Length: 184
View 1 (tube, rainbow, N blue to C red):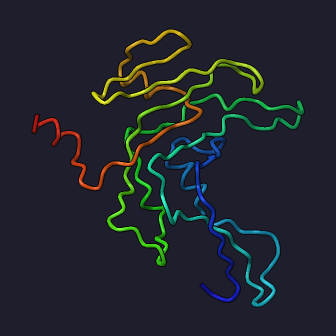
View 2 (view 1 turned 180 degrees about the horizontal axis):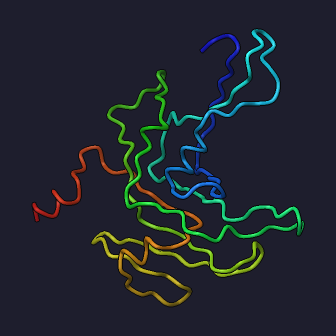
C-alpha cells in the first residue's frame, strides 16, 4: 500500500449487486469489484482517486442480493428491472479475493454451490409476492410458496428472476458432483 492509499476492512454479510447493465451474475460481481474512479485528485500526487473492493474473508454462506429496482426520474418512483440475470449452480469468488496476510486462512475454498433463492413476483417495490426455491441434500429442488411446497425441475429453478441467491461454501476436499455420483 502506498502513502496515498487508504484501506478499510468491514465484515461482509452479503453483497448488493447492481443488475441494470449486466446479463449475468458474474457480470454483476465484476462490476461490483471493478476499480471505480472517484471525483477529485489525490492531494499528494495529483493522480485520479480510485476505489476498489476485495474480499479478504469469505463467509460460509454467500448471500447475493440482486438489485431489481431502479429510480425512474420521469415518474419519480422505483421501477422493477424485470429480466433474467443468468446464474449457475456454482460460484467461484477467487477473482475477487485478496487474502488478509495478517490473518491468512489455511486452504480456504472460494467455491460455492447454490442451495436457495428468493423470487419477487410483481411490478412494484412496495407490493408483490415472495417465494423461494431450496435445493435439498439429495439435489432436488423444491418451490416454497406460502403453504404450498412442490418438487421442481432444476431447469425451472435456475430460470427465475431471482432477488436473493444463497450459495454455501464447498468443503475444501469436495470432489466435483460427477465424481461423487460415480462413487455411490
